[in-house]
Image 1 (spheres, rainbow, N blue to C red):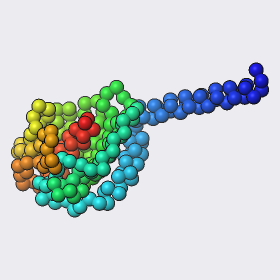
Image 2 (cartoon, rainbow, N blue to C red; image 1 turned 90 degrees about the horizontal axis):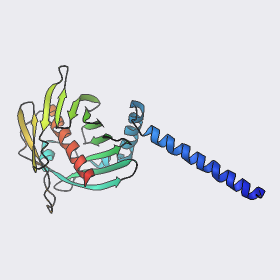
Image 3 (cartoon, helix red, strand yellow; image 1 turned 60 degrees about the vertical axis):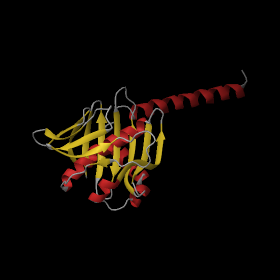
Amino acid sequence: MSPLIFFIALFAGGLLAVLALYFVYFALIHFQPGKGKIRTDLKKMKNEIAPYIDELIPWNKEELELMSSNQVKQKISRGVITTAEGVFNSIYHEPLIAYSYKKYISPKRNEVIYARTSNHEFVYRTKKDSTELFIDNQKVGVINNKGLLHGGRRNRLLARINKNENELELPIIIGDKERGTLMKPESGSVNPRAFQFVGEMGKNEEAVFLSLAVLELVKDSIKK
């Protein structure tokens, strides 16, 4: 073997070893990520959709009633790591909610969602069959795979959303009162409203109501 061929083979072998180490490192940091990794990713996700956040219109009760399940600027990247982002509009095409999504390497659900309105910040950390919910940097509780939100000192039922996938209308109950219905868009529908029959709510109730709905809307949009 000539010195040149030997050098090329040695270089190629070294390069392959470096690439192999990189992929092992990549897999390790994206498999069962710790709290530090999640914090880093959330900061990056927030920065990536910052231009969308800056464009959001001021939020009020009327915007909840006018929100559409349609979205713009949606980007989905599927691979070893799945990422997505987008903006949900009003029926008048005004930007209301921006979000970013990341799914980690795992045989079961392992993902994080960051979402923003003009006045609220939502973080969802999902592992296996449960999702920790944070609103404005405060942990509210845990949402199970049946759509039940438990929280507080006594871990009581705070809210729930109907999870029957065969239904187009998903009632959202805060406490013991139905506050509104999340509407799953029918095929071919143009600019459908996200909600119907929205009742009176306090600010905290509205934030919880919206948090359950946004989680459902984002997950549905990723599945499509």
